[in-house]
Image (cartoon, rainbow, N blue to C red; front, side, top):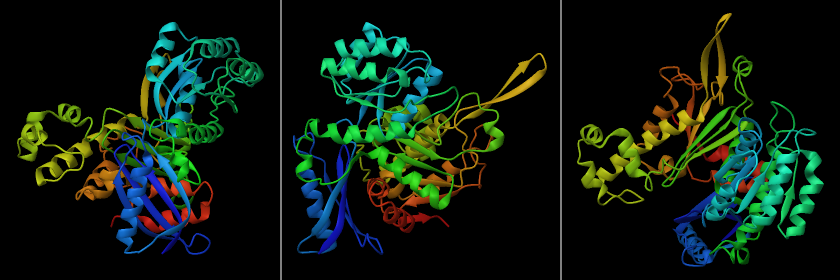
Length: 454
């Protein structure tokens, strides 16, 4: 049997491999295999090979040939980044939004001149990439240059992406070149007041990730098998979401996982709310909640609901169920608890991602401002990831998450206004990778594999 392309999604615990064919004409999804990820065993190739073997068995094929092998990865800690800017509400927020949208885990953000303590914290984090911004074009220069000098002399040696005042580019390049630190230059992420310029930064982050992921522990030999693009998995989901926007309009994507809960939104929002915004928001936005994982942070979610309340609601001894709780729920009790925690994680993540109206008083009377991302025009809420593609109650959960603005307190669709759909084959991340080279085939496959609820 032959496939045009295999695309691996290398997660922290599981590696999935999806097969696609007919990319030049009528693209189709052939099937998917999975195996345990083996980064911690020292070689990602073992799990990748095992997933391909599982795929072959599921397809009932004696042999499996393929043209290309592409990949996304959140293994080996994912793409850990530190972000440094000038003013928190301006360049720092813009740079952070660009990093998150590219699929990074932002472990440190600073505003203004770096301190010794900031540098010590960065050494503890050991980032894969540092994003340095600061100053609008032809504006303030000193802070970014000071930070560049300090990072070059006392930083971790991680590659640096500079996306600040264009006047500093040559100086920044010379500073890091003299220190032997790899540096990437791109357009200013905040070139003018109230203007975000996210896309150039996202593209360079993806290129840097692809270059440097091969040096991560356990990933050193990934290029022995993967012949094409390698993206951070959350960044690949965002690529797919942006492609789907062209097909179905304004959307939000929820990925509720074992370690984090991610919300992606692609929407311009309403003109009415845009006139009230106190700061610009990106067209495509991702937030990642590291305290809302269904397995890693299950006990925290239970505390947020209240263990006694949860036990009464589910008519079970939650403490007893947690003693044997597994990453993939097995028993009926574990499933019911996971579904309830999934709902809680989704509710909190949406609240954190979504903007609000704020009322304040002036000498002329009450005025209104909008803060945060406007999702009021979202037409479709999509569920992806393990929980929202595999749990038996996923449709009920996603419907409640789409309708969670009953009190009309968020800049979010009113109950019943948004449709719900599912990444039924669990291929959004894979098709996000494919979109980098075959956007039309990826778009058609996304459309064909997306299942709308009745």
